Picture 1 (cartoon, rainbow, N blue to C red):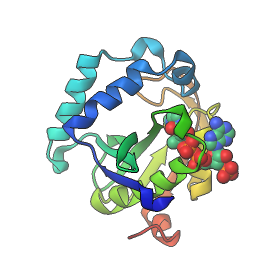
Picture 2: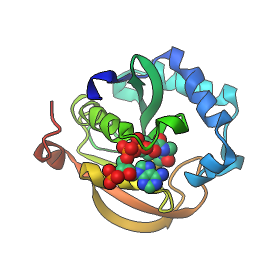
Picture 3: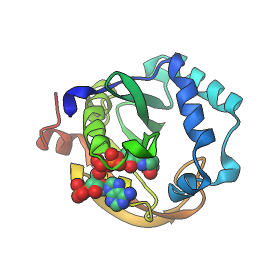
Picture 4: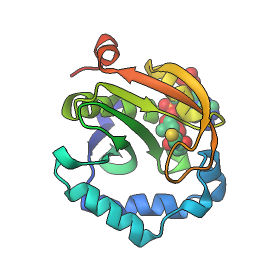
Amino acid sequence: MDDLLHVREIRLADIGHIADYWLSSSSEHLLGMGVDLAKLPSREALALALEAQISAPLETKKSYALIWESGGKPIGHSNLNPLELGGQAHMHLHLWRSGERRRGLGTALVRLSLPFYFEKIQLQTLYCEPYALNPAPNKTLQKLGFKLEKTYTTVPGSLNFEQEVHRWKLTHERYKALGFAQ
Ligand SMILES: CC(C)(COP(=O)(O)OP(=O)(O)OC[C@H]1O[C@@H](n2cnc3c(N)ncnc32)[C@H](O)[C@@H]1OP(=O)(O)O)[C@@H](O)C(=O)NCCC(=O)NCCS
């Protein structure tokens, strides 16, 4: 399966896919991820934010996104936001269509994303804080070897409502120890 999968940095042409995902996903899907529907941006605001992120030089990026491809087609994205280059960042994971979830793709694509985060961006610590009631990312992170640091209540991102989250952590050292380095 892995040879069909590919991870690359986001391009301007990907913006429409990401906007479609956020603005066309069902309320059920969005609520299941802990999204506050009232906080969803307009298509224009989302596109402007992504354009700004894509055109910013790496050294000044405040967020960073990768596109997940299968068989040459974009099927999802992973991004870092907030991002402190060379320091720490919070990761987000999204396979855009339900038919592509729960088939092992997410685990393989996060794994392929890690060298961008630890080698290109040179993070020391990668965090991911999924909604505690959303099993897919929590199980995926556990399976990959992320360590559960704590469970607490917070508003984990700009589009979220207050919720209980599990905070998963992967250090650069553990990334290497797990054999993920390229
Ligand atoms: C999170 C996500 C990227 C995981 O990718 P995936 O391809 O669906 O996950 P995988 O098939 O690689 O499964 C990894 C593990 O999670 C489990 N899992 C996946 N989806 C699950 C679900 N809905 N319920 C329970 N377990 C689930 C799998 O069984 C597997 O564990 P196992 O090997 O012990 O059986 C994907 O499900 C997704 O994009 N979901 C929607 C967006 C989302 O919720 N993002 C999280 C925001 S932080």
